[in-house]
Image 1 (cartoon, rainbow, N blue to C red):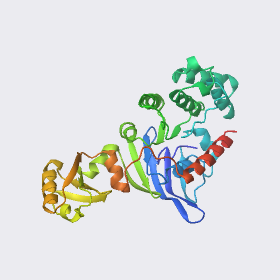
Image 2: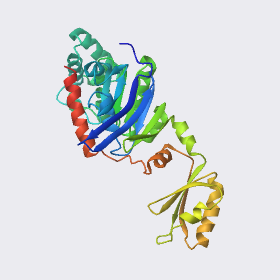
Image 3: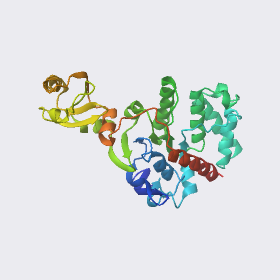
Length: 341
C-alpha cells in the first residue's frame, strides 16, 4: 500500500478509555512527516505511553484511528510491526545471550534468512561500535552498550519508523550524547522517521524538529522547540517572598509589563515584557505591602517554562512510569514479541 499523504505517522482523534470511565487518551491528533524527529512530552500519567502503544500496535484504541506509513494500525497490525522499530524504557536485551545472538534471534523472529540475518548482524554490530564485544554476554555490557544493542535489535529488520520510549533513561550524559549521535547518523543516512518520548528536555530541545505536549490525555501544544518558546514571549521572573507573607498576587498583577502570573509553592511565576525592568518594581511593591522578597530568578523562555505554561506543572526528570504506564508497557512488550512471529 502507498504511504499516506498525511505523514509517516498520523493520529486521528485517538481515544483510549479504561474501565469504561478513565480517559487515558482523549481525542489526540497530529501528523509526523517522513524523516522527522518528533518529540512527545507530558507529565507522568498524561497519556504518553498509551498513545505510543496505540501507534505501535500494542493497544487498540477505543475510537479514532492511527496510521503508520499509510496503514491503519488496527487493521494491519502485523504489517505495521514489520515497518516500525520500538525501543522500550525497560531493557529488552537478553542478558544470557551474546550481543551477536540477540541480533540473530531478532532477525529470525522477523523471518529474515540466516545468511541475510548474519550480514545485517555484522553490519549493525560494527555500526553501533559493538563488534569487539559481540561475543560477550549482554549482561556484561555497560548501560550505554546495552542501549546501543537494543537500538541495533530494533533496526535489524530495517524499519521506516522508529519509536523511542524514554530511550536514554538512566544513562549518564556521555551515554545519552552517544546514543543520540547514532540516531542522528541513522536519520541522515536513511531518512528514518523518529518518534520519541523523553524525560530530558535538553534532548527534546536539541534533537526534535517538532514537539507535542500532552496533558490529561489531550494535546495542549504543538510546534518546533523555538516556536513553542517564542509563544511565551518576553521573560519569566520567579519571585519568592518571606515565609508567612501575605499573598502578593494582586499586587504583582498590577505592575507595568506583567503579562500573566501563577502562584506555585510559595513562589510567583510572572511572565513580563522585560525581567530587568520588572524586578526592581516588584521588589519595591512587595516591600511596601509588607512582604519582603527573598529570592529572584529571571529566565528567558525555555522548554521547562513552556512545559509549566501548558501543564501547570514543572517537568520532573526523575518521574517514573505510573501504574497504568507499567501495565501498558507489559501489554505492549507481549504484543510486540507476539507480532514478530
